[in-house]
Image (cartoon, rainbow, N blue to C red):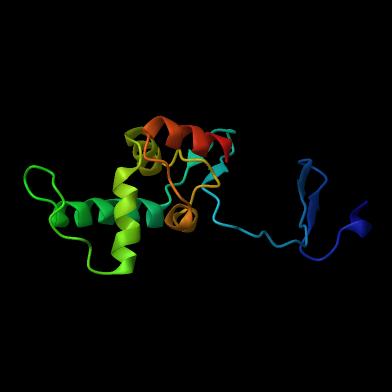
Length: 129
């Protein structure tokens, strides 16, 4: 049995422990969660998306008065896209900040995808994705 063990692999016949090396590379594609040894899902917050939502709220605060009326349009196109994130449903925003958003939800998808104004429609649309 020990003659079939290749370089980088070990076999300890006394303790019955196997070390196996598999020649593969893992490709990470922006995943938001991983599994620990206990099988419990570890949450990974998408910091880029969370930061964009915060920036959208900052732009909205800067462009509105005390009554919440918009008195100035955002200055550039990037800010006009980000301000839309401040109008996401509160439960969607909370999910983003705790890392519980759907795996398909990312900043690029939200920037260019038309969002419904109704919060219920937003939740339904994102559940379908």
